[in-house]
Image (cartoon, rainbow over all chains, first blue to last red; front, side, top):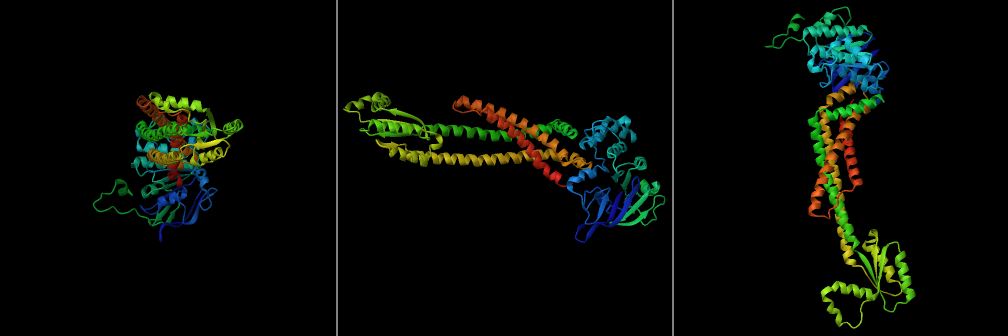
Length: 247
Length: 288
């Protein structure tokens, strides 16, 4: 279980990036974290991956607690987290297979079955035919799917995805969300930070809405958001994107 | 074992990847080590020259004309058994005159005016190098002077003093320069390695995020540093060998670096590369 209890991050005296946020995420849950730019989503994701230490409160992931963890234990915590990034962070000179295998090799996993595990992970994201392709030979959606396979390969407790579809078109966005939903159905908790409210509504996932660093609304998995959070109005002289128009 | 193979493979892969960058860093490190090698060559030759000059320092003991056989025997035993003495040569007054004659060569006629041999019996005493300081020679000379039958002990006190002063200055400058050159090498190598690390920051950050330990992240870069350091020192050693051969054609007295010193030089290059990686990585691994 992930438990976030009264967490706050003060980045300058009296100014808080995140303030008094509390929630829990259970095994196999699919949770969206939404809010405007600067609402505190990325800070909260960094707190969940223990890249930042909270000023107040504490984060707990399984038995790891932010107020007690030793630096030398961090690698073992990170093996329970599958990180997914907006910019994919694939190593360009390596194939899809090598990018995924890197996680197992660098964490000392047994070589027995490594090959099979990597191929299975790539098959789960529908890339069995792209095993030997390098990132530049893949589309954005395919690159993100390699990143998801990489995040899943260690059987983590949770996938933390920070704006995973920020660089993708609408079709690929839906595809990635469907894939993440499928992963959560397999028992892995998935927490996705996104500013895309339309997708939150479409997938009817449990949604945590952040504004100015505070959790202002929590929408249950079956309901649509109440409207407390609204997408930002388009800037003058800037045409709204098709997705914003349909939101 | 699994991560060992991984780190070894990644280290060697790092060297092969981006060959131009690897070549540049090896060249920069090699030139830095070459400068250090030139300094080593100068030091070795300097010490050789100092040793050659020191060999010329000797103590000459002039014996009284009326010395008794027992006193002469005692003096000879004392000199041969003293720990400072490397070698003793006894010259009778006739031997000394014959030597003198040989030294005069064409001007031997100058000796014809002499009716008797004015030269005394002498001992020429060679000391070990570590006894060739003013204080220590003074100590030995004082003891010899105190022996029965000794007329005078000479060793060029002022000259030895000046020589020791010059040797001290030269060795001190050599040491200071050595430290400066070694530190500069470390800085240059460390910065060269840092440039390659900056190019691989994405990889380091990714390995951190997926749960690799600091040791697993560090080792490939250390292996890369060691391999590059070794290649660089091989390059520098080759340049140094050509330089020495070129110098020896003009000045045959120039001494090459000995094989053990060359081995130490290669080892130093490899260590420097590894240490450069360790120091440069500290900043990258400080934050998790």
